[in-house]
Length: 432
Ligand code: AMP
Ligand code: GLY
Image (tube, rainbow, N blue to C red):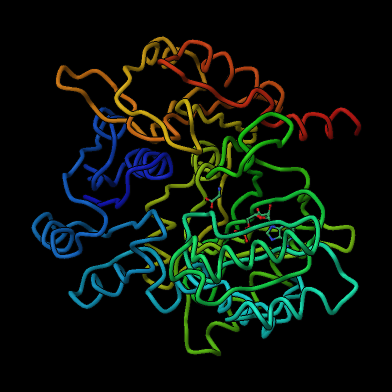
């Protein structure tokens, strides 16, 4: 069979690579893809953007692809799955209504509260005056202000005091720093604790939970600096042990799936809970409606089960019949290599060297995120997050060592990366 993957990042490279491993698959098309998906065995790029629904539909029909996997949130929120289904085409991901779980933080909070899922207390506002009264009327001084809509991961402001909260409200609601995403906004209590990502695949009835992972959202070592899309990840994350994972399935994921059904918004696809492990227990910070990037990369590197079986069972609503997932027992660590200036502005088009040398190392895979092929077949930078270097090891420390060994072979003008990916996990393991 042939499959279409929509997107161009490291997540989509990892999904396409994993789907291509399946003996059932002859080709995986990636629209528009990157240099990594252009070069891998059994994958091929298609020059169609993720927003061009008519062209994507025409291509899926022409090639008679078995199904389409939608990677990023924007096409899901814009209704790509609805458009495909209207044409009788199979697509993996939530429809537009269900994708509001990620696309609207107000809707997400409504679902969490209806489902009695533990989350930060919050209130919704649509004007500065009411928000100011709220901020100054209580004893609480630390808030998080969140724009309602999609803001490329930037619409969340974590504040240390009331003045910062008021400033965030003004930026979101008055200056419209995030455009219409700020027409409504939430002010919520600020929680503390380590964060974990728990992703489950669901067909709207049954959930198949993936192994817990941890992202590294801050740009620099020691969790310092501005927020990014994620500078590294590892799995499994011992922060979420088996007992906690069961608790999260029972108290978080399943009630969410059932509540969405009751709200006539059945959700099919990836339910990605961004959790904070607070002293009072796990709390949901947000839901995403897709695989995490970069969490997807170490997850796919460890998953042994054929991903085609998992995704087609979800699309056809027969996840209940799927055998339990099989995982490589080793740990996986992913280090993101970025362009100079990221997450601010950066220059594209630098030539990347050392990819062949890194590829020779055992138990290592370099997934491409922001890359493109140059005219002579050379690999050039084409984004802020450029490469996701993943390695497997018997321990997290071993996987980290192997990942950084591969990273050390690769460079381009201004390339940089965090040097402490997975250190929290390694420190926790050392104390056991
Ligand atoms: P979100 O997009 O809602 O996941 O928020 C992005 C980041 O903001 C999270 O990964 C957390 O680091 C932080 N954050 C969000 N909500 C809260 C909260 N209620 N308390 C503390 N930090 C938060
Ligand atoms: N790794 C964070 C995200 O995918 O949103």
